[in-house]
Length: 340
Image (tube, rainbow, N blue to C red; front, top):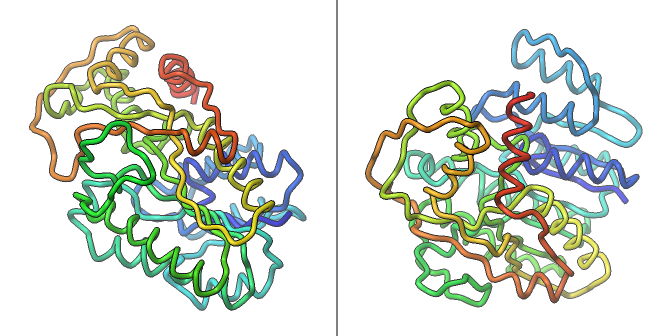
């Protein structure tokens, strides 16, 4: 099978591509190496996903990315330095490859940054995604998986969150763009017969996690004896999902997608285990054998109080069965952080 993965040099994407290649598939990776965080991290992610243990000599961004493309291209893997907002550039890629399935992970991520840059989030997460759907229709690609987010639930009062819950009250531009993606995805499914699964990810963590996310940020700051920003009283809670379980859920969704026709599904992928901010911090402290220096701050606009995934549908429909509890997952993350 030939898979096109957008955002394939990011945290989730690089793990997914690593798994697809190990299973003998061909992969086309589209990533624009956005300045949201250091592009060098994405280069390292890409090399790790290809299992290339190279001492990469960094110089200048454009040159580094072109060098990465030259050393990574193979019979089974192609990397494109491409922004999904550029429809013409995407069209050239679609013309050059026969694509069986698209797994769309690329997005501008983050709740708080979306409040500062809402129009840019709309451009990437809505318009960029629509470019892909337009090309799916143009090139008769009928199998598509999209990354949505648990943020669409907002401050949902019903716990745990179920796919049938009302999600008409997002509290950040990021969440709103993901909700729009689900709605517009159904339009393209209905009009053009594109089989589609929207996966609502719940707080993914693990090796290669983005440096701006709490577990990675806290681990780095504590290890360097710096204070950490601690928002609220520590009772906000998340359904943290280990990266291996998320990848398993994506791949099982692909299997279901390939075997089915006429489908549009929204599926939660979580760990079914809710952990408070205080509990998360305690696990990191235990694994680092250090005590955090807390800078107590008020809760931030756009942050939800609690996320909790009802994964009944995922279990029944695709056979999803997460196996990594938070204690083991945190231990694996810290071990990776200390040796990277």
